Amino acid sequence: VIPPPVIHIESYSEDSISFSLKMTTSIKVSGYVVNIYWTFDTHRQEKRTLIIEGEKSIQKVANLTAQTPYEISAWAKTELGDSPLSFVHVVTSGTRPASPSLKAKAVNQTAVECSWTGPRNVVYGIFYATSFLELYRNPHNTTTTSHNITVLVQRDEQYLFLV
Image (cartoon, one colour):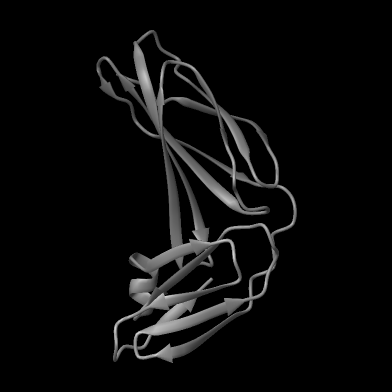
């Protein structure tokens, strides 16, 4: 039986998490697959996937958000097959940034100008869809470091926007 890998949180800050991966077995490990999950505004779960080669590994994941819960899951790729999943949870330190204040204004039938307030030098994600279900499951999205963007949409539809 292949055991799950051990995920150990080495350290965390307001914008990064460092963790180590190891196996408690003599089975040869060729690498790991790691998923980092977090929830955006209770509507959208996001994920970042890392493919890691080798047996032992210490990884640092950066560009995270302060005071946000993250779930890290991992499995090992071994000579006998894939291991079961293991999970850890960690909340980044610091103060969570205030939610931006979004304004969306139709420019014409196929363009919407979105603008918002918030800190500089960060990346903003803009999510939009024609229903809450689509906004949760599979929204259109784009990112920018500015405080406004024009989004192209389908005519004769109503849209929901999040930033």
